Image (tube, rainbow, N blue to C red; front, top):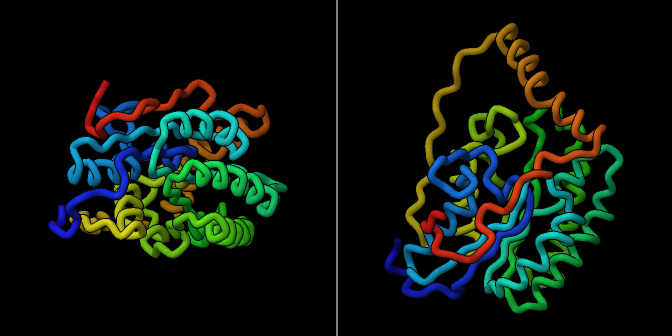
Length: 263
């Protein structure tokens, strides 16, 4: 840790949201819930500055913004954090027929309640999905939602971590096999971006992705078929049945503790 930072302006960090903040795509058997993710990585850096720093993570995969508000907002406020991260609305926006303006209204309520507690709040824009053929058609909705995120964040004096601007995330090597969640490299990148956004000196260095394996047209199509069978079809079936991948999942860090405390 840089000598430039002698003391943290925060002592208790609470993360709320969906799979992005839970850490899906970044498996770590020794971490709570078997996942690490950007929030754990970010909290580790802050804990290096202050041994008394504590961190809770209430995020659960698959949650819509309404569920995050109903299930995570109250418990998060009860923990009395002075720093909160919110990434919500992504699962709503990518659904067919979703209205990004309506989703943003729900986000505004969430941010307003958190800011009324006096906590510093950091919120995320969505990733530019131009590089993903399956999700490219949603790019316009994501862009509209992002502008709403920025507008609402400005209105409530929240800090914006701009994923849309992260060029590395246009590289498939930063993504897990499901093409929907970041892998360890992607989560490491996000942790660095959040630290930079909050002007926290750190020593996290960008990681070089592995070389791309040689691929021809036939290999690419085969990979697409495997991906559709293993990831896309189950996702569509869950939407049809109105079930979520997070229905039986509990928060991995429900109580504030030192980031390296393992239950």
